[in-house]
Image (cartoon, rainbow, N blue to C red; front, top):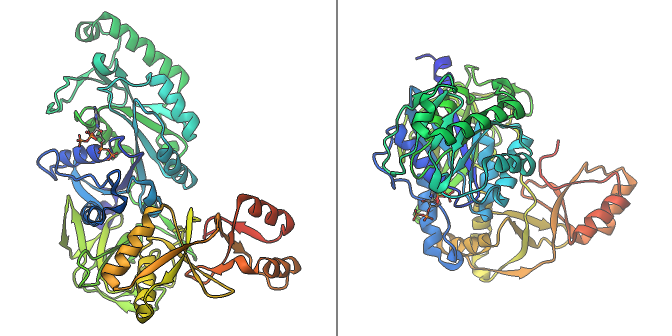
Length: 529
Ligand code: G4P
């Protein structure tokens, strides 16, 4: 197979949902189709169980699982499918945002009874901002839920999507009879058996066919005909180009638990979902079909064994072929590096590979050279864009509790921040360090890991910060800017890359500052050019 064929057969995507909507169950069923696992229950949920905040064994256990499920790959109908795992827990939302920079498309799972939930809204917004192609899967049709049309409205309104139903349910919950697969023009009947063998469905090119009445009953058949007619009147027809541009989103219905409607989703997915997409760097757009290798780090995972402090850096291959034992340029460090044991991921296993192609993820063992966002090339000086940091939600001063261990603390903090566990800000005025996180859970994770992996003990102290605002441009000759820096001196800090950040204590302060110094632009995301 040549490079172009390898690229063409790859589909790299993420599944996003609010916790409990059925992401893990769906992932597992997809893997079953690929023959990558033999039985249900093989994929462990990486959910942080409720009340686990102080249960560090649980956190460690989760880290173990999340390394195993970071990338799940399988082959289906000759397509190489890479699923990138995204943590559902909101405290790890930043991790998910970063992973979304490495996917070429997304499947959004929604619980038919709960409808659109908070976490789904946030994640879909990020995908929308980047025009990532999305397919919606409405799950748990075996349960009573919302009316299908109401739900489609809700998806349009709350998520701002333009939906096109490509399958439609016949009844729901107790009355659930199956789905009509609009995409494949087939009827799939639901047996309600969790071990349901997946059938190919019964082809129905003409819905007026009286056989439909015989199979599902007169009433259900006429309701289905009416509903499908309504769909063709109300919703746009499917347009692949528009889907690929992120302008419309196909919707499927099913029940992941019962493995129902999943094959229809997967068959459509491999047909329409994009192969590896071009990616913008600071100098140019890099096409996946270019011969020269390039890739970027989107995730770093610390080793589970604290005695060996090596880490696994996850690199998404953007272009060319990545080869084992070949010299590549780590652009930020200006350093050539080669990797003797790059890991590829297959189902839940990882194994050493000789070659990987665009769309694939390789895990590189790292002793501290990589940071999230780093670019690797064959020599070209360029860096991929699009891994921004968002303003954290929670902030605390971090203090060293053991003066003998200052070095360990600094090193530990440095490495944990590289992994993207949290963000560190250093105040201009007194060099005090402030940690910012997305969720409260991370403070405990950091404290625990500093102690167990670095032998450092830290304590926290409250600091009144509402948002981190990145300041641009840093124009020293602008009077307003000088005035801003003088007045806000106490609240100015540097992020890890040395960029100027205003730590505003309230939403009101942000607003007042913007009004008072209109030429000083404040951003809530670190990458704003
Ligand atoms: P998540 O990864 O999105 O958090 O969700 P997960 O797949 O873990 O599913 C959450 C719960 O919903 C699980 O039940 C799972 O069995 C159930 N579920 C998933 N898909 C369906 C479906 O199509 N129909 C029905 N009725 N339930 C579904 P649980 O009781 O929390 O966990 P478990 O004990 O079954 O593992």
